[in-house]
Length: 252
Image (cartoon, rainbow, N blue to C red; front, side):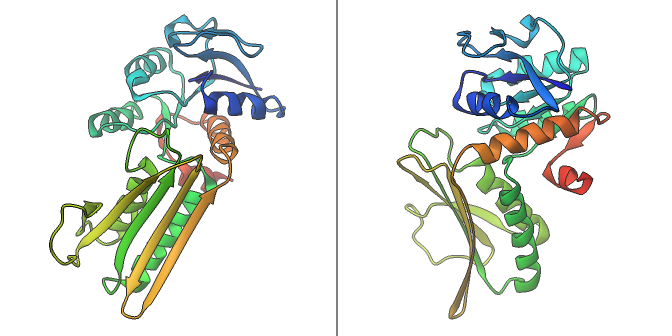
C-alpha cells in the first residue's frame, strides 16, 4: 500500500484525487498540504510539508508555483519521491525541479493525461514525415479561471516538436502585434480562455492546399488525477532520477 500526501489537497484537483484514491486498493492518502487547512476528508491537512504527521512514500503536487521551494526542500531532506503536476513555473523553477532529480525520484510533466502524451508522440511522428513543408500552429483552450497562458502543455508540445526539428524554430505567441508575413521557422502558440473548458489542445499542420489537425480534449479533471496517481505508484518504486510519462508508459 503506497502512502500518498497531496499538496493542494483542498483544491479542485486535490479533491478529485482524494475521491479516486478512495476507490483503489493499492494506495491511500495519509495527509494533505494546503494553505487552507480545513479538513474535508478523513486525513489531516497541514500548511507545510514540514508539518506532516508522518513521512509519506510519495507526494503528489497540484498546488501553486509559490509552494515549490518548501516542497522540494522537504522531499530532498527526507528522501521522499515527488510527482510535480503544478503548472505555471518559471524557467528557473523548472531547472530546479530537474536538478532535484539528481537527489531523489522526481516525476515531472506539464500534463498527466495519457491521451495528451500520445498526442505529443503523434505530433513528433508528423513533423518527421512532413519536414519543413507544413506550418505548425498550436491552439490551447482552458476555463476562464486558469491564470497562466500559454498552458504548460502547449509549451511541452511545442518543445517536443521543435526538438524533433533540431530546435531550429522559434515561438510566436498570438499575432496581434505582428505586422508581417508568417516566417517558415516559427511555431505559433495561441491561448483561449472561457467557460468551464477543462483542456483542449490542437496541433495544426498547414500546408499547400491541405491541413492536418491533431486534437485532444479532456472532458473532466479525472484524466489528469488518474495519471498523477499512477505516476505516484510508479515513482514510489524508483531510484533517484527525473521521470516523465514516457517512462511510465515504457514500464507498463
